[in-house]
Amino acid sequence: MATIKDIAKLARVSTATVSRVLADKTSFYTEETAIKVRRAAEELGYQKNTAAMELVTKKSNVIAVIVESTKSNFSNQIITGIQTIAYKQNLNVIILYAGINSSELQRKSLQTVIERSVMGILLLAINLSFDNLNLLKKSRIPFFFLAVSFQKGTIPFISSDDFQIGYQATKYLISQGHKKIGFAGADSDISYTGKLRLQGYQQALRENNLPSDKNWIKLGNYSYEAGLQAMKDYGKKNAITAIIANSDLVAIGIINQAATFGLSIPSNISVISVDGTDFCSIFRPQITSVSQSFYEMGVLGTEYLLNQRDNSVEKRFTPIEIKQRDSVKRLS
Image (cartoon, rainbow, N blue to C red; front, side, top):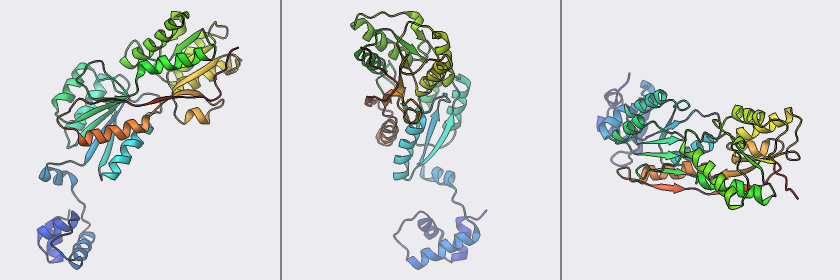
């Protein structure tokens, strides 16, 4: 493998000059010298050893993104936001997947990142186990959680306000005349995210003196299959007139299973989704949604990661917006 010394020998310049040219430092050499060095590097098939340079400079240009392998699709927008800022700052992004609520896979992903040189870690929609969270903190690598919030005040995150997601979705359906409302697809028995949404849903019902039936709450893992199962559990003949689906894929599962039952959306039952990704626009009927600002989460998370010091605790809720489409019917 060619080295800087080999390039210097072929180009008849010093190794210091080769280092400056390859690092695009424009001082101390002429354009003619730069051309000679680059030609020599190309002739020798030189590949820059980023890891070695990071050891010398003690500075990494790599951001690690650890993603929960949930059967949803919102992470694409967050990653796009991350890559937008990374590209502007000439940074590299590596992506690792940590399974679905798997402590073992979480740990493996964290160890993979910690054992190499990275400038920071962004964790997407992951609920780390207690031991893995301690491992992350002990690494002393700056980190941010995205699309998930925490009750305790020592963990930096950027997310939507999940209580408001549940609350606003329920209030919207109530404003459309619905009084018997289902809540489907969230893992409220496991995650803080699901618990907050369920609390928001229940609070809106209480404020409007509406019934809350435990049989209308169908838990899941935010997946398409969870939506199918929820609608199967509700059955063809049920009391509810509307359902809050806790991801776009849950909504699609509900709508497809409703069609299997011979039910029409929204004539027979209304559906509002949480997330508001492109699925809501390309599916038919187009799905009314509580849309989250996923791209903004990615942008802000990366910017905060670049600017923070010593893992300062930053908390930020990004906006949500109800986008009316075709899957909710107004009752008279």
